[in-house]
Image (cartoon, rainbow, N blue to C red):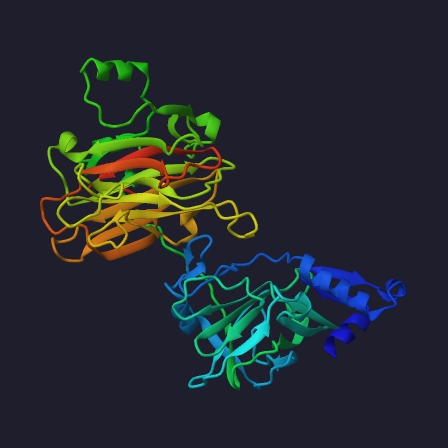
Length: 514
């Protein structure tokens, strides 16, 4: 048996851990049982050291490469990715024998990369379903790649082994098995240790262990996904490109309003209080200004930002409303809005909530469970989701963001949260992001409204089938900078967010020029 040969070898390497000259060590391990425990511990505890793209993780579903991080498959859904990037490299049969047994499949045409991603699904017309043990059941019997390296036989245990179901929304990686066939697709990810010279790797085989329950004879296909992420071009025509760090951008004819909060202080408050100036931001409450030097501002210059403190004692962290009618004399049907956002270092969001966006509520509908019937009010605020747990090696500690929308005929009267689903929209604490949203209201009664999002100048989300209104009396009433936790529940832990360099305009803005 292959694993017995591995145990007898003097050089074992798997998952980045190498043990040399084991002969003397095995003298202390007379019983074969203990040897299996040692091998099993090596497989489970050691970790790879190669950097990789991490195309998907253990929370993958049909729609999400990572449902924990709210990151979509880069091509929209799994099937598109598989069709565009997968190459069939092997076919094998699984007999309908209800017994645990190892199956070895030669991978003669595999492309050897430091990261190998395999998918297993049923051949066209096949109706069987095969079950294989996963590492959640037994790491020793989990999917493995065996290979020859110089004079040694080695193995890699799958770093990720899971399966997805057509149109399935629930992650299945916690199961003690993976399924393939009849709409079930197994996904496996292997990573070679950095010490392995890939040119010396040969004779790869995939080892799978069947469970003691099979569902008809199966004919399965193995395909290799070779995905290289295409660079996203940054939009070059933003009006902010003509102004260094936004200085003077408020003079551009397409800009409704600009605010970097640097001029706010006691004097501006006095002028507003005695009627010398009209307040631009309404429903603000008391804003907290923080010096750039205390938070590591993206500009590297002196100035102020506004802190939005989320506290365990309350839901609302902050709110600023910019009303178009009072500031410009009218309400547009399309607008752009860009702001810089920072999630404080070490921030942990125990649940979701609201972020800046657009609104047309008119104090009638589009928030707080007041459903949009097409004639009373709508909203398209931003949204944040629960922080990804630390066990997720790629996304742990990051907070996904998206939109929270009240459209017409939304089944949930409280609106719906929509993740933007991109790597940049799963945000890292301590890093500034330039977030820009464009909203165009739909033709009354038609589903042709548009919502587009750019982060750091990269277009990461676009929808053109939105339904906000059934009357032209509803327009874009305001830019709504709403920082709210929940729902009803309050944060389990205190955390801070910061906002700066707000630009509201009638054309694409883009990131600040540095």
